[in-house]
Image (cartoon, rainbow, N blue to C red):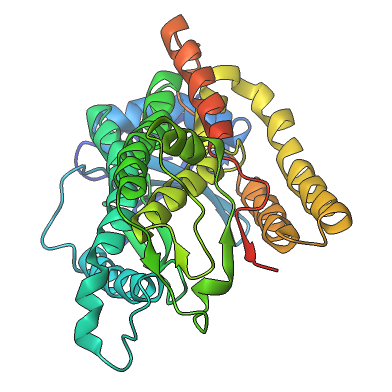
Length: 366
């Protein structure tokens, strides 16, 4: 029986027999599809075949479709082709929503005077700067390790923060635990540096007056140790009278700290999961199961002992962590343990995440 042929420089089906016995090859829109039978578990097959495809400029994934196993090979590219319109559109939309959110923190009625949105630029710059630096940290290290990743996707949201954050997508197999660690840790460390700068600038700026009738006047932020520590070192206050509040740039620092803490949770595809997976290997499966339990326990504590202030937030993140838990964690090809320096840096980074934690990050006053 003749072996199926493949186009270009893709591996010959016969060279895959040790891990994947191919009986048909198809060229499709999503790449070249090898139909066959895997010789072992999915992760084992990918760990065996991914280096072979990677050397030839392809990434691979395995799917089970209509009763058949399919190995899909897609050409890799770390370059940006054309104008990234989707990224630009989301960024512009997020600029607008953060300006609108900032107008509320500055006590500006943007609906009555849309041009007044421009007065909220310090808030928008602080928020977008922290998020962008965090994601560009991931992007830079992805490029360094030749891992295909997208530019940041900013997520606009017309709420009091103006955004739900930003993400990048890694569309590639991760070559090693070292690469997984570097990519995972780069975002939180870059974001933390930006958060420290934004917070220091924010607490040094004068407070603003906020009308009692506005929504933000009824909000109370719970500041983590990181923000409180910076304010103390600079001799600045985070609490003012009933008609005044911190400069909105401080809220940008608060967002940076909150995002850093959430991202460092060791579950699913979050940064903390990448760092922890690189440090402990397969023990990650047991560790990440504790995250939803911890979040639900925190929500229960606040419900019982703090009149429910903040309980809904952590309950929501508990449910979300269950969802990302089901999505699984990144699995590197090379399982060689990381070096001692990375182990120390990983532990320090996870501990810095604790400084970004506040039990009641945001709640209605009263």
